[in-house]
Each structure stands twice: as structure tokens, then as C-alpha cells.
Image (cartoon, rainbow, N blue to C red; front, side, top):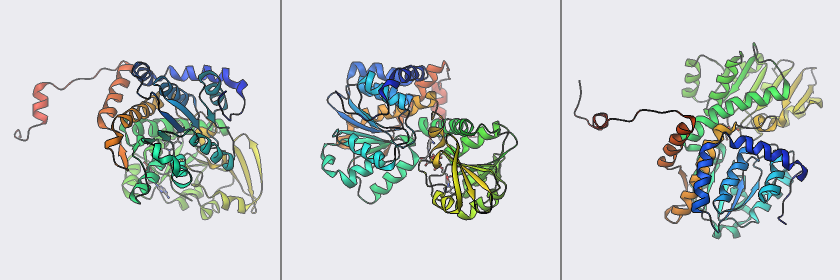
Length: 419
Ligand SMILES: NC(=O)c1ccc[n+]([C@@H]2O[C@H](COP(=O)([O-])OP(=O)(O)OC[C@H]3O[C@@H](n4cnc5c(N)ncnc54)[C@H](O)[C@@H]3O)[C@@H](O)[C@H]2O)c1
């Protein structure tokens, strides 16, 4: 019997139906799975994955397993696990999972250690908690490791910092940097699922509300676009003049958080930064303001300050905590300030995760073939993988495009032709 730690194995059957439902929207990963089953690129290799335990991740685990890998999975966030999926992976796929929705930080890291006990040849991470634990506390395991992948912006930033310090001990491919990842997953995936999380948690009407988006990066663009589509008056806050200018020309109001704080009804941070909503912002917010975060860590809203300012707090609905402040105002915090799209909804739709996880699968295969020639640093996903995924996705969607004629190819590559 395999070792695991999940909430309840009886949830497995429901998980299986939902995993199969997600698979219908993941045709690119499906094609990769068929090829992996024949070619067995991971035969004899152990993989420790630290990812959000969702239906889409289950399909990725199944794909790696079909390719011969011996996989274990742990959560990349204490609130992002779907317990039915965890149960199904253990029961029906015999994949050890260490993840329980709502686990505390102690259990979260205990689970990361359990995944590392698997003595991986390859690591997969989302936020770099597994890789940093491995480098800080389990260095004995480093000698086995061929390479790894990283899913998200925040993780890539952490790993690049490790590489710059000379601390990174093996090559990592930054899946987030692939066009077929961040253009779609961060923008359309986070955009839609963050709105979904806020609505599922609160059931508030977005039309007519002042909706403040902090950060106009890939996720912020998608979130602002979708909030506007629901009829909200979107306000953007930024620190980067280029992104701020883009937001202005995209038609949003842009202002400092201190100004936005006074008029916002709903706030959502997606920056990867700390204390973007800080004490002095909380002090000027309207009674009833709703706060959420969709960035990777729960540090974007200064929750300790909110705790200090409050005289009482109570859970008014699942994932909605009311903080009553000394001056009588109430502020509502969603999902403990953790990524709201995974805490209160189901994370990104399968159709975008199809591309993100195709990048994961093909990047791992690339590492197996090339890691011996790679340095201890963070690499982008090879362009040929990125383009192949786009090609396969279009084909799966039944969309055809034109091909350059020989004349166009020559024209685009020449410098001699002009006016
Ligand atoms: N919820 C999810 O499922 C999900 C999915 C993908 C990425 N993420 C996470 O979301 C975060 C953002 O990712 P991204 O790809 O959009 O990153 P990005 O780098 O494209 O954008 C972040 C933006 O935030 C801005 N910013 C930084 N500090 C700020 C501040 N104090 N105030 C206002 N703006 C500020 C930056 O200038 C930048 O434009 C990361 O933590 C990433 O890991 C979450």
C-alpha cells in the first residue's frame, strides 16, 4: 500500500468524474500522453511535484505516469487542494498525494518533506517552496537530481534570485516564461477564475462596483478585462510606469492605492509583491470593502495589520471573514488572503491548463534528454516546444492558419527590398 495523506478516500469517485471532465478540455496533453505511453521517456525516473492539487494537475500526473515516471504529488498552497482529486489520485491512479485543503503551515511543509522523501530525479514546483526546502534542508538529495520545472511568476523570480546567488544546484525550466503559458494561463485563466472565486465566495453583483485591480501584469490585465466585462468600474494601481500607461490606454482609471482605497468596493491584488494593501490603505477604506488576492503568496494584503485593527472577526460564509474595526467599519477578507481562484473556485479552466501542463510535460522530457549539457540556472522553455504547443492547440480547436509563401519568406528575410 502506498503512503499518502489526503482528507478522505471515499471522495475518490467524484474526483474521478471531475478529472475525466477536465481531460475533455485538455487535448494537447492527451496527445502527449499517447506518445509518452509508447516512448516511456521517464522510465525508471522519480518525480516529486509540488502543484495545486486540481483536476488539471491530476491529468498531468497521469500523463507523466503513462510516460513511465514514478510520481508523487504535494500541494503548492495550503488552500488550493481539491480533496476529491487527491483521493482519486491515490485510489485510482496509485499516485501518492500529500495534500489536504485547509492544512496549516506545519502540515504543508511536512507534506513537502514527504514528497521529497521520494528521492526525486526531477522536481516540479509552483512557487518554489519545494525547491527551496530541498536546497535548505534536504541537500543530501541534490546529487540525484537531473533538473526541474517551475510553473509561476513568483517561483521564477525566487529561482532566478537563487541562481544569481550561485545557490541553485540544478537546471530549472521556467514554464511560466513560455508564451503558451503566461499569455493564456495568467491572462485568461487567472482573469476568469479570479472573478469566479470572488463571486462564488460572496455572490456580489459586480456591475456598478468600483473594482480595484492591484498590478497590471499578465494576471492583472486578464482580471481587469473580465471585471470590466461584468460591468464593474475598474481602477488599476501600478508601480511600473509602462504597465500603468498601458492600463490608462486600455481605458482604466489609474491612481495610487491610497486614492483607490477610499473609493473601492472590491479589491484584488495580483502583483507577487508584499503589503500592496497596507495598514494606511485599510484605514481609509469604505465600510463593507471586500479584499481578495490572486497573487501567489498571502502577503499582498497586510493581514497582520488587519488583525490588529480589528475588535472582532467572524466567518460570515465559507471563505468570507468579516473584520469589525474599532471605528465600527467592517472589512471582508476572502479566502484568508490566499489565491482566491483556487481557494473559493477551482483554479484555471482546463483549456488553458492544457497548454501550461503541455509545457510542463515537454520541458521535463527536454530535461531528461539535455540536462547533462545544461548549467545550474533558470532556462526558458525552448521556442520549438512553445510553438509546437500553439500549433497543437489550434489544431485541437479546429482553427487553421495561413503558411508563408516562398516569396513572403524571402521578402521577410531580406534587407534589400524597400520603397
Ligand atoms: N492565481 C493564480 O492562479 C495565479 C496564476 C498565475 C500567476 N499567479 C501569481 O500572480 C502574481 C502576478 O503574476 P503575473 O504573471 O501577473 O506577474 P507580472 O510580473 O506580469 O505582473 C505583476 C505586476 O504587479 C506590479 N506590481 C508590483 N508591485 C506592485 C505594487 N506594490 N502595487 C501595484 N502593482 C505592483 C508589477 O509592476 C507588475 O506589472 C504572481 O505572484 C504569480 O505567481 C497566480
